[in-house]
Length: 322
Image (cartoon, rainbow, N blue to C red; front, side, top):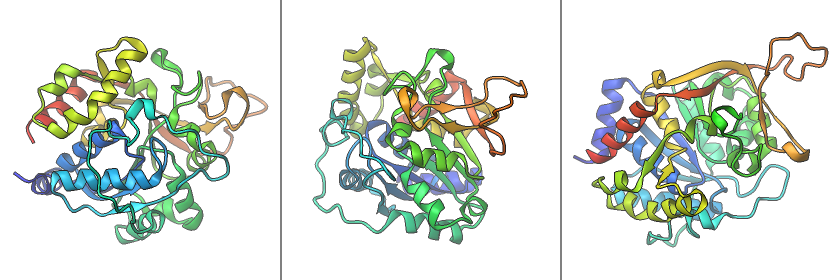
């Protein structure tokens, strides 16, 4: 059955809201997009820089849509952070093209503007649209600057990003900072200081959900098997792990069943300099301190626990039964 039909049925049966995914599409982003196509009403894909340059991200998104025979529109967003130099591309993780050097791409990387599409969609679906951000937060920050009404227009924003040190998981770029946040800490700080209805899914949770090469080999999806080989090899070389974390797919998993995730409600901020640059922070205690950096900040949902078995079972079953 075509996945467009599956997605439409899922949206109807589960009363899903329309979804946009904002991505710097690498391997785990591609898994998230495929998962969303099969379980959510994915109406569009907005691209940014991060794992790859934004032009390559557009090509990757178009290649994925072409492979699965879907017609979701693809949009081109920010090519660099708000105010600092971009980080070097990490081609040893996702490959030079972001998809494990496996895919044949369309040459055309032109696409309409992502930021204006986000704003226009938010107005069109007022109160109904969900956004998953699985790359740097630059596109969302730009949209907030252009449209101050955005927090009242979007239903929910699910963010893969950050690290808080629980479960033994700190940052993956420094001891403190996670990749998506460190790519544009100023954008992340702007987003976390907003009144958007945010859910943050950090490395503390995403590193707990890992899928082995054997599990991927049992999927009927040749595309996913092909692009994940490079990513699996990276995990094996880095730490001897036979599995890979599917970080970004957990934003879609949260939408499928929020009950699989344990959250706290807390204000959040981002360190903007020094050795902790890019670190996501929350209050660590309840003492009434005289210099409260969180005073007056909005509270957001932060995921710090996950039901690993349930999340993995649903993800693998969905991908296997496509």
